[in-house]
Structures are given as C-alpha cells and as structure tokens.
Image (cartoon, rainbow, N blue to C red; front, side, top):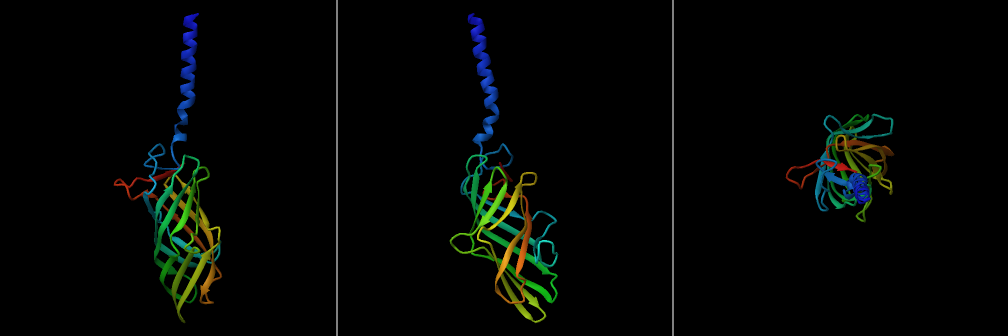
Length: 221
C-alpha cells in the first residue's frame, strides 16, 4: 500500500509539473528582445526602426489613391515606458519620427522641400494580445504632419492633423515590424490648395533595441 501511495504522489507531482511547464510565457513580458522566449525589453530602453527594405512611406489623398507624397526614407525612435506581463499593454514614448527623400506626383507640384511631424513626443501603446499599436497625442499638442511643397505658383505649406484618437498599426513578429495602413490625417492649416485629407501608410522593420550593444529585434507577445 505504501508503494502504491508513493507512486500516486510521484504521479501527481509529475502531472503538476507538466501542466505548469508551458506557463513560463505568463512570466514573460509584452516586449521581449532577441526571440519570443528572450528577456524583457527594459523600461527606459531606446528602440528604433526604419522603413522595411524596398518600401516607402506614403501620404496619399485618399485610401484608394496613388496621388500625393512618397518618401523613400523614414524612421522613428522611442523609449519604453512600461512593459507588463505578456498579453498586457506596453507603452512607449515616440520621441522622434522623420521623413526624407520625398517626391510628389500631384499636378502642379514640382518638388517636396520637407515633411516633418510636430508636437512630439507621442504616446504609443502596444497590445500584446491583438498586436495593435496605437499612437496618440500628449499634452504637447495634437499629432501633426507638415509638408512644404514647391509648386508652379510658389511654395505651399500644408499641415495635417490626426484624429484625437490618434492612429493605429499592427505589429508582426515574423519580421519584427509595425505597419500603418491608410491612417487618416485632416488638413488644418496652410494653403487652400492643399488636399482636405491625407492618408499615411508605412511599414517599419525591424524594430530593434538601440540601447543594447547587440541591437536585438523586438518581439510582441
């Protein structure tokens, strides 16, 4: 009887270990570096990404349009603010975002002087469950993008503003990317020749931890 009871205890312990084994993911964090089972990205870590190779950032006049501004160079930088357990919502301060090497195929536009964003930093949240990335404004002011165009009648400034709810993208672990598709901005000031709306699309990959010597890729879970 003692042998049977001892065997039963061992079986119970073994079963418990087997059940508990996969729960290791619950001890991990939303943002991890290097691999899905890698260490947590530290709060305060600096992250960054440039456009996915071979892609461009576009500000087109409508979701189904190909008319507007195209930039072949763009990047962002940020700082991790919070990084809770896997499945939660991590937050980051988006400290910088740049666009360069921009052109326009809009009739009457002969060149793009600049495309800049205003009122940085922004707040970015990353949902470990849905992989949604949401960018919202801070107390500094609304999210804005200003493009300065050379036209056949002179220089034209157009400033666009995102909705109060901000704009959203999606993260993917396959290439450690964040993709934004047709995110709406509305004209708020500048020339009346500016379009009333513009739609941002851009894919950034890979997102890496620049404050780490190895610059590991960032995974979301």
